[in-house]
Length: 288
Image 1: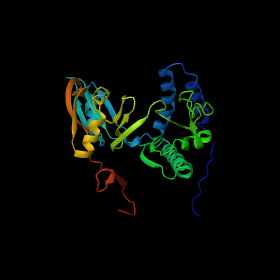
Image 2: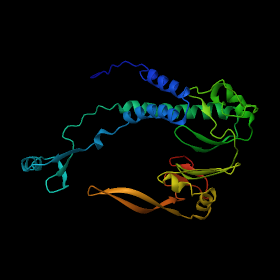
Image 3: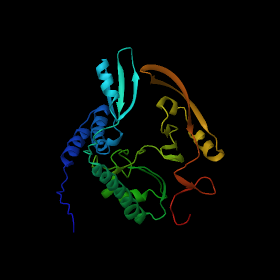
Image 4: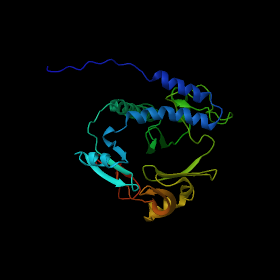
C-alpha cells in the first residue's frame, strides 16, 4: 500500500436545503417559491463548474502595459476596443482545481438512483404493465393502465396535495415533502404524447391547453409550436423552423439580429431509432 485516503463524511448541505425548502413552503407568491428553488439549484451548479474553461482577460491603456503583456507565453488573442484600450485574453497560467466536482457527480448519481429505484422497485412492482415514455433528471412521463396504481403508491411516494379535494387521490400527507413525486397535471388529462428527442416534446391535453418543450427556442416562439407540428415532424420527417429576434454583441457593439433556427427536428442522434420510426432504444443495449 503506497497511499491511503482518509476523509470525513456528513450531510453538510442538509441545513441549507432545509432552510430554503422551508422558505418555499411558506412562500406566498410564485417569485418567492422559484427563488428558493433556484437558490438550491445554484449550489449544485457551482459544484459542477468547469474551472478549465475560465479565461483570463485584461484591459490595457498604456504602451508599457501592452508591450509587457505581448511578451507573455500564454497569450491567446488580443483586440483593440478603441485607440487607447486593448483587451488581452490569456490561457490560465495556474489552474486551481478548487471546485468539488465529486459533489456534483454524487448529486447526479443519487438522483438517478432515486429515479430508478422508484420506477423498478415500486412502480413496476404494483403495475408491471407500466410503460415509460420519457424520463428526465427528476421527472417521468409514464403510461398507466389503471389509476389504482397511484392509490397504492400515494402514502409512501407521492405528493397528491394538488388534486381536487373531491378526487380519491387527494391527500395532504406528503404536501411539500422532499423526495416525493408530484403529478404535474393533477387537474387535467393527457390524451397524447409526442417526443422527438430530449427536451423536445409536446402533450395533447384534454383541456386543450398548450404544453410543449423546445430547448433552445425562445418562449415567444415555442408558444407557436402546436402538438400537431410535433406529430407531423415525427411521422413525416418534417423540419420546422422559427425566426428569433436576438441581441448579440460583435466587436463590443450590441446589435439586434433575426436568426432562423431549426425548432423541430425528428432526428434523435442520442438514441437508436427502431424500424417503425417511433420507438427508440439507448445505444449499448444487447438487442442492438
